[in-house]
Image (cartoon, rainbow, N blue to C red; front, side, top):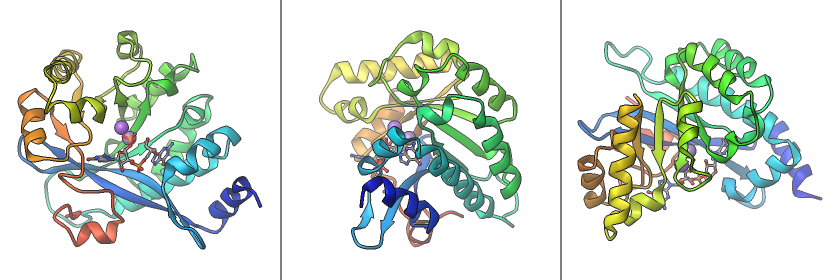
Length: 255
Ligand code: G
Ligand code: G
Ligand code: MN
Ligand code: NA
């Protein structure tokens, strides 16, 4: 049997699960949101990370129904987070999108359906998109602008690694830039990496966007990211991706 047939079965039989990783406000340490990260709980092979099946799902187009499931499930779970808590801003959920999901006209409908079915407020959903996913489609700018008008946030993921182009920042309505962890990791040893992180933060601020430092693993890197102007941090320092139940048993607990 092929992996492709396995993926179809996985979707039908509910073998996909979402892990969540906290995104932390670097000023005061509170949790702004959680990024949903897909895992495949394979009955024989155990837990399979996304790099092992997302490329095939993208090639075959299966990423579209799988991505629909991710959006629906992330919204459904997030709608229950902190329900009944008085006051305060509720945490967002961030969902990764592939190029195939951004191309074409289905995305606004899929998103609207996920929000309506879950009751999640649009302001609590963030969509993460990489630079390379935006190369393909001329309509993406219009589609993303429509989503932003609904109150959904759009984050530019892995910034600096792909086909980094400043025109990308002008053409698409991002609310957030996520600085790729290759730059973040190198901040400890490289003045150039620090200059890039600081420059991106300043540029983002001038464009009305916030900056997230990805892949923060140490106290020193967290402090550097804050000093260089990043608003938010994500990484093993704050918490590894984990199922909701395990988050509840950790410092990154949801409410
Ligand atoms: O979870 P992990 O850090 O191993 O993720 C590896 C890669 O898989 C990352 O690039 C991440 O963006 C991607 N990924 C994780 N979950 C999803 C998902 O639900 N949809 C898509 N398209 N990509 C995902
Ligand atoms: O491409 P994207 O940023 O969506 O993917 C997030 C990926 O980064 C996931 O595979 C996640 O497990 C991984 N990740 C998250 N935090 C850290 C970290 O602090 N260090 C490293 N090495 N990987 C991380
Ligand atoms: Mn991401
Ligand atoms: Na990223």
